[in-house]
Image (tube, rainbow, N blue to C red; front, side):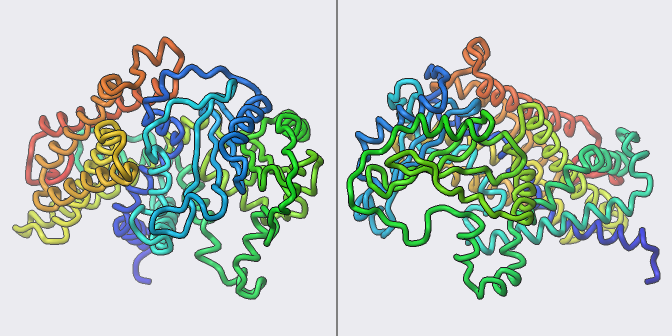
Length: 527
């Protein structure tokens, strides 16, 4: 190897980041948004903004929900109840219709039915519009929405591995990494972008390493299936049944009627077993049957691991049954902690905010790395007297990914309020607005990869974000003058963050308008 180690690592750092950088921008921005997916979902259901919900204990909420389900779905095979929490004060209920009922038209699968209930009274809350809400971004960051799931997850895995290589090679390359963290030279062209790249990388370096590595761990059984196939003789179902125990295989209703025991005492017993931690989810299998069981899962936020403890009870008597958590080994516990770190559902409000800020720093790190490559290459092409296809392609993709992606995310929120509430397949229509807006931005950027296109897309994205609080109030939501006095901090926080993002995008657009265009500076990119 003729070049030194650092030079080789610099080459590896550049290309491992560049080739997947535009997909990484999508993964980072969608994943960062997912830390507040519950709050995003609430904002996207304005019908629920002004509903006063009194806090009650999970035991009371469960009994009220069971009373409603006994009326609406007494013969259902399974009930699912999500208990109220600080981020979701209502009870979410879902049930599977009896076999042969509720099948989707033209499909053999049954559609689950659901209802949102007041935990204190059991009254059904105002029917909210159909939307994927924040779950759209959560799924997007690892399933890429329209792609077949295995293909999408392989693409995301390759990008994550490239990101990990880029981070490690970047650490080797920057021997003065911590000194560079305190160095920023504004208005110095390439040096400014390098400084910004270093700061955004070092600022949250432990987070970047953790989120990339644990992202790979979450899908490790897909990427490295050979050990499972050997140990379980290619029987993946047996492996996952042991890893995620639920109903025993082949479990069926007995056909003998037996009243379901009250859920309140069952939940109180489970909470006592967990040292006072509240229940989060309840699954009732075969309600009102002698073979019924009640699975109670602890609420999130009481530990790092994503594998939440579950207790099983006899549905007719309330008697505790053997726990499915018994016998789990260290490997399963380690995997649960890794996954839990990645999704961050354990985080309190302050830690969740730090995760969000770190995610934004990761997005900035990827964006500045992409821009830095174009900044370095631009003088070479200008010296040769022509801009090559490769540089034009990178510049166009940079505009579409860095400026066009926020525009598309804002378009998704606008679609939530502007599409008719009763529109068929409404969640898919909202998602289409995101992809159509992003496709238009990307095509326009590739057609004209120049500074005015940067300004235009940043301007449009900034306006769409900055006007979201106005749109919220104009379409029936609780605007800032309502949410702040009434302590609706999830809604106030969403509107406040969109105002901040909109302001930053508008500032960037205005800043580009003031910066002079020279041959030695970035004419087709941001400066």
